[in-house]
Image (tube, rainbow, N blue to C red; front, side, top):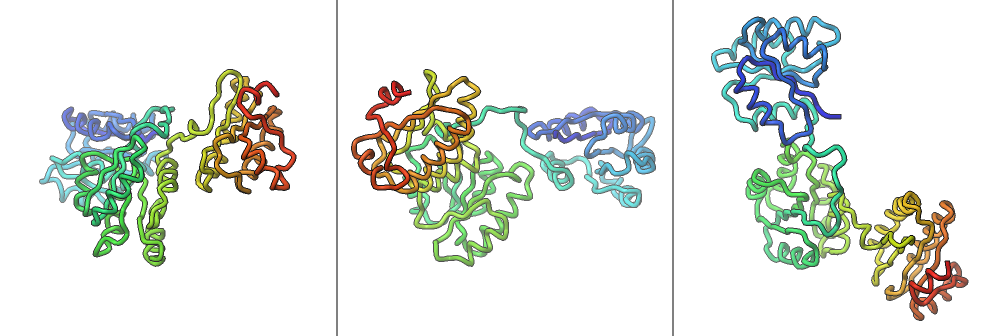
Length: 373
């Protein structure tokens, strides 16, 4: 639900500044020119927070605040007072009425956003149903690591993607980077000196613009205490060195909510084809499994009732792949979908080694599998 912010100020300039400060967040900014209008709007729209000027015509901020706090339906709305430097003492006097905070004019937009974000949950703006990015779409990944070789290693490990991988060596550089451009994902070395990784995490989480930024801690596999502290602090996940780049890519895709289903699923010509990768690692098997039910439901919605499992490029059929296929076949049965298997002679031979798959029938091409249905 969008946050409602009510700004009550007789200065049009101030109201414009407030509206501009929150334009990148998922919120509605309501405006009133004096206390009378402010009370009426508060009663009508029940804002999540009120930014209230003290000195206004018709009804000033003190009177509006008093009436607001005497109304059982409105008294719970948090209020931040806006005042000139000379009015600071006045704010302190009326704080007992129920002011949550105050801001001295003139103020910077960043200060206003920071104060408000401590009271209400500000989220980045977006369409109500934004198009989900795909795994091949460009995203921005920032690495904070004081060892250049590690940054270069990650760049090389992810160079097959369309992602923009950038690296900085200190938390200060990371903060400057995020102020200019908020990355889609932040990977921080937990071995930075002076507990800098934890400090950076807290700074990032305290800023409204980066509050929900996925943050990965990166650590040597044997540094269990370092990892425990990072998890306790709240890092999204831990990446261990030496880095498994397939796992890293999958974790970034999941954290950023990228759709990787296109790697495995094709819905066209009345068929859903499920293409298993050549190297069926635990990561790819888990990823494919996570997408399967959603994609089969999508197939049904599109009038598709036939599924082809394409294992022709699989280098080795192991028990995990067999279990994946068994699970997928059960889903097909639940949805009354017909299915067929396509596999190379090598895969067909290997399937005979497992009790679960020894009776499976394979076609040697997609075309023959389609014809079998």
